Image (spheres, helix red, strand yellow):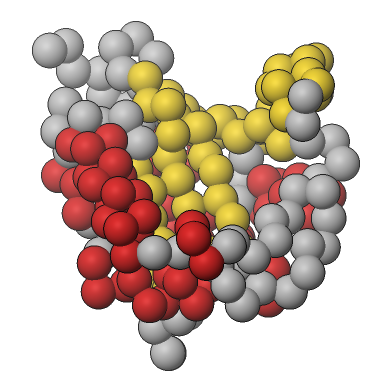
Length: 197
């Protein structure tokens, strides 16, 4: 299924959420090279110069376009509306159609923009796109029990806690538990109409 939202973007009061484009290269390079030192185990440090080349950026854009066109993953950059600065990313990943109509929500706000409500604002916009434009029925998020900030975001954006999933992901050479959160279109007042292909 090729979605109408292939290149769609969303505006909020402070943000523009849209796919990255070639003209975003300098913005992208700046975002990944000007962060504060990592703030917790889930935070990333700045990328090396060798990872921030135009060639690498073009490869990333090509992969994102391919995954969008295959309806597998939708990746959006999160830009501040007032100055156009790239402050983070939001993804809908591992999309499963058929009887499931499901995707996983992932997001990252660069740590020099934390504690300003950007993650909540961006994720709420992407949930709207997921249910209204991509016509998904269910969105899930798996969050580490130690990632307190992400647990708060999940609750703020209307995901319900479904329970702990033991040894769900292999991270840092060990299996780690995740707390599962989810929402369906009905939770947002939208009736899901299943259409057989």
